Length: 140
Image 1 (tube, rainbow, N blue to C red):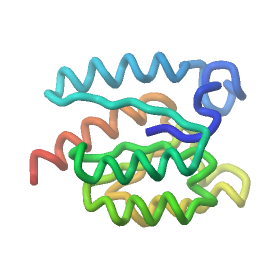
Image 2: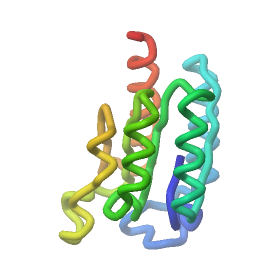
Image 3: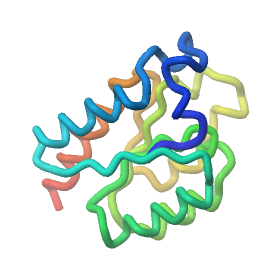
């Protein structure tokens, strides 16, 4: 699940977020998901409410959530609350290292709900999150 402005990846501040587009990342995630034996439901929204609805749906329809909440990381109690209510494993991903960014980006509400956080490794963070999720689900 991907938050606001991630649909602009590849052209928006590539020196911060890299040159991969969201479609590039989606393709790699779908291929890796197939290799790992699970389906990937890859989504992006600029709307906080839509993301909350998707998280609520995931409670019954999905085994886990990998989320890059983007700017909502730093502002959304609604997304945090929906993640906490989901009761499924959550891994938070950020392309950039939020701890090296502006002070207002250094705190993530979402991290409270996440089993793990991967940041600063660019698009590779999604691959690592998927492998970690596969291990978490194996242990269940």
